[in-house]
Image (cartoon, rainbow, N blue to C red; front, side):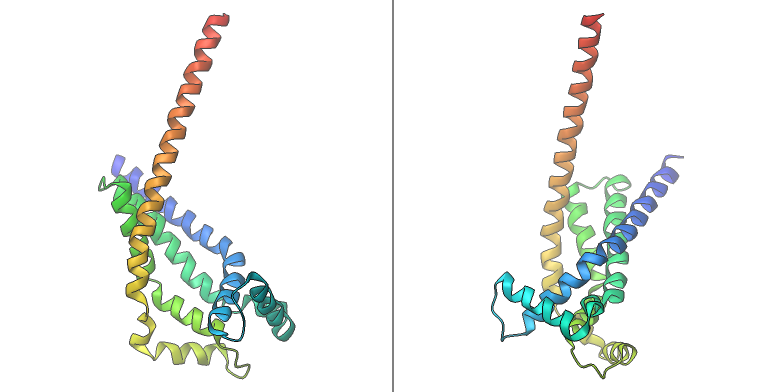
Length: 197
């Protein structure tokens, strides 16, 4: 049954998204930590040297482990986000026959809409430098703040639609171009083999 096959493919894309999100956390988490600290520390400049200085400062005061502050929250954000992103895109394109532009835009919005609260908690945890505050106490205090968890959601979603609509549209066009190029190469090779024979 074609619809069951489509469903299986959609789940495969969601699972691949989860795995990609998990793998990327090793790079995403420390770089976002440095980015977030740089954005709130007004005593440093805006050059990459200043950001490198912040990374070194984190490592010297909090150890190498300090560079991964918030890694579990980054994981909790990225795994479901990528699952929703790739799974919803495949569903909208395969099952509903939407254009890559529309499906990509909506996939980006959906992926962010579900994880903005986690991203807010992650960012607040990463910029918090109070050594006496435990992670569980911090998370409980953040979760009790309710609507504050959704701060910045509207600009985030306004950015997500065009960004991901353009991303998937260009991705699909380039992929299609290379597929056609591959077919042309295959046909050319077959013709050369016939001539050589």
